[in-house]
Image (cartoon, rainbow, N blue to C red; front, side):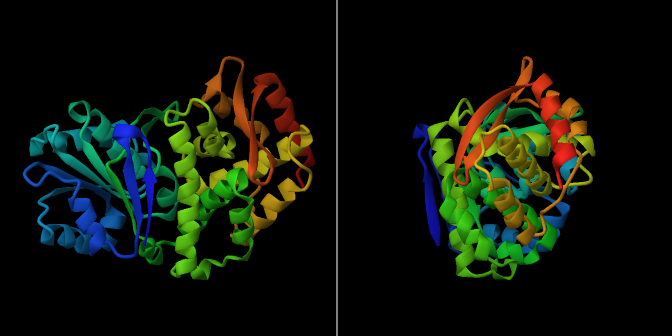
Length: 359
């Protein structure tokens, strides 16, 4: 069992990494729920089918009365029609400001439920119980909540911290291998931007070890890196931007294909490959870094190549775009980053160059 404290003053909370959601994890979850108040458990159909009965029974045995809201699985659920469905359910439950929302699912459910919590009666308590590796190391940590619109991913959202995060590494046993690889992309990103030690450790790690204690250490290391960044910059004004390494291109890829061809981790992996190559061609990234990124991603079957030039219109629509350009997170070397503003004009040229030279 590992714990991480997120030091944000009155908004501080704990991340607990422990195997099993039916024992002490549930006891800690219950400490953050007002017994007499309304509790909603938001999940998706896949997670609820696999884990709903055991987790729900554990909550009820611990004295928590709740109403489940089970939504379709997939990125398209993170949109206003489903948010409205959640609001309707909360209204039917008569949830007041003393209520609690439990987000029990992957990143889509975490983002949607978190945004509902941030906005229902101007804010109710919520607890993250992430069930995908990607959500465990990424979206459940840091308080970013959002829904998608036609104009782009996560365009409508709020910074709203959970009261508690319960991470169970055992749920990886029920994840498709594609989803585990997607989560590994985010852990690779953490090593690339902030820890050469973690990056090197991932060179020797095998996916058949995701159920062993060694993986809990890797998961803890990834969460700790994000904890440190979030604690220094809660609202994404400065250093927290480094967490977007690979994301500018990755989000554009997701939007280009209507969120259907690639999952988030795959898109970020492609984005990291693009960013490391572009950084080297600009003289910012140490030579050989792109090769190191490629080799590590290949170890997890994430060495995917995509057309770069077609991404510019989608990058211009990204929420982090600024007048005339966008801030790119580029590596100076493994474990170190630089935030670089690039104009759309130069970016168009760099993307074309990337397509012509990418072997």
